[in-house]
Image 1 (tube, rainbow, N blue to C red):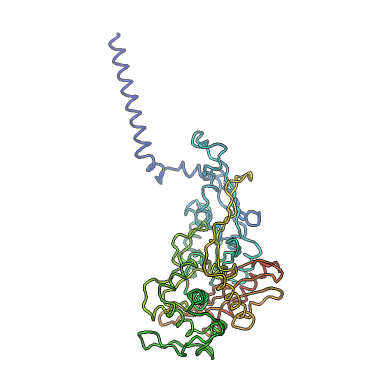
Image 2 (tube, rainbow, N blue to C red):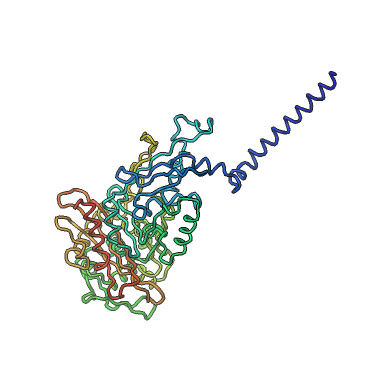
Length: 485
């Protein structure tokens, strides 16, 4: 009997060891694979078993959750979905998350450890905290002004508070309603096919994920480079610029659409957007100087997050002088997002330094207790303060008596720069209309807003497209909203 009991005991011990080894193997080697398996519904069921946290604009939620009573219980809803889609992105039970819904998923879904009452609490209990809240820096009035200004035309608007880097508006047009993608039924699948297959790409975030040739709006960067390098010491002195300008090493000539650009001063050339002057200045500053200036403004930064990922704006680092001349007027391979060009205007308005843009003010628990407060990151010195002072005056001249008069606002100091960027094979495409600007109340110490607007209106007549005529009125409406007009 004793022998039988001993053998049974050994067998039970071996079975227990086998069970422990098998369990350890599952947890250590195949656990992640099983968790991520499409056949494992537990993760999805747990994820959607509670309402998702809210994204806030001006303290009010622009998102919500709806109880479907189904296995994946709560699905995402959106208030004014098309208006805020470039900010929120979507949270779909079938197609995942994008933009803020993705970048702040841990807080919104309740999985961020900072939401738990005690460290490792959720790990020990196997539970999940209620979804937290994400307060954005967006101002509803500014966002609405930008959205209504574009009026469904292809394009984008980005607006910043220059001294803090807060993103006040982020609009992409045409837009879409992210709530159409929330569920798991045929309606969501049909919406996905429709939106992803649409020729006008409504799901493309043109404000931060699309880059454009900035055209003459880039002349702000070239002017800053020339002033900082001492290539120009007096903005009213002649610049020794021929009209037309022969691109170095070639027979191709660059001309202007206005008179008086031959040997024009920097002030006149900036006010009336003389291509020949800025092409020549870029060559005289040199490749190294132009690259350094562009990168101080934020070009070639591949790590920018707001916290959503931002496509890098680019200024080529290897060019001959002819290519450098074209790049210095915002053509050739120079590309920029509207957010980047808003940052260019912000650097001028803020006196030569700029803070990196940020879209999140703070995150909290569902009950409102702080989780993270988005204190402003450090300043980046972009240009000398004296250079910024000159550029502020040059941008004011554009609005007061130049190509940007449509952006003027009574009772406010406004500076701007127009741009009409060529693109397509042989520059045959309808040009992109740019306007970048900043505004300050006359009795205020600091500027209130910096704006970039780009419009790509394929249905307009080519001769009707201009930064001053097409984009400047939109920028004015956005600036008025930021000023509280």
